[in-house]
Length: 397
Image (tube, rainbow, N blue to C red; front, side, top):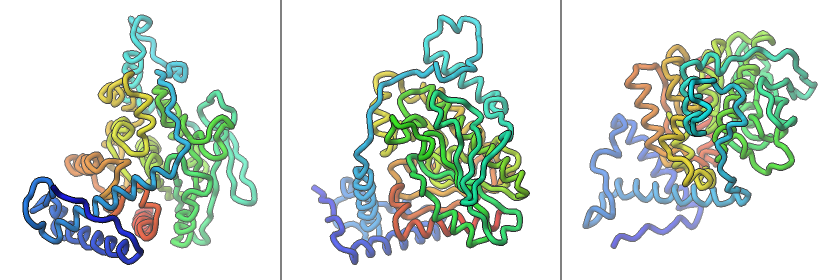
């Protein structure tokens, strides 16, 4: 019976794992990404001693997965919310023959099919009629979509101006449940590199969060229709943020998003002609599959179980998934980033997304982080991630 290697117990052993991870990652890139497909070793399938490098790779994966689980467990405020189809959140359901007698799932599937086919209409946006920008760079403007929560209907963003940006700016969308300081450090790195940054607060986050919420549950939850509508709202808010930058005189505009922010950035870039470059930090072709399989959304999956299957959910959430819009980003300079040991955006989903770009011949750059999802925000990986994102956007804009 194979035994798992002991967990690292001190800084030196953790650094050793990082060094081996970096070596393995470099070796994989040198072999054209085939290192983990050639001569890979599994302790359950092989007798005798493991090849040193292969065993090291298995040990690193095990250690990172344990670390990801530990980081995930630090959050103790997750709630399993009741399932709801959320039809009341969709005020533009198409009126189709026989729709009155259709099941909620069938109505939502028909709506989603219409939304994908008519995505220009679904994500249609106008620039904000007005805005308020204070001396601290705090920007406010009305959201395109009106929700039942007044706090959520005002978009908040913070503008970080570079001294010499040469008309270049980036809209920054942090990860799900990011607090108000999330990605501020990255914005300041962008500033040092000569890029102005507009850090956008997503719906139901920080200033936009009603008092009833501890987490940003209403943007990703077991309320199917609400999730669809609020993610749509986030895209329209991002388009208005681009409109603000354009009105300020910025002519070369990019977008950078992490995790959920990455998905929303892709949707925004696919429908906003003023975006020239996008950096997608953690990637998947389908919204539903991340929710269904991901570590961070286990509590959401619990609320969905027994009410809807993943295939149906994938069809309903297709309008807020990147996959249907790949051809729309062919002209946009693109960086794809994923993490080798990610449990939130499972590796197979990230790799399949990259393969879609390759199969379609869509130009892109690729960076693979030798860490997991949560650990991307930890040293030293956050510095490596920030370097790749900054280097790409400086060159692309």
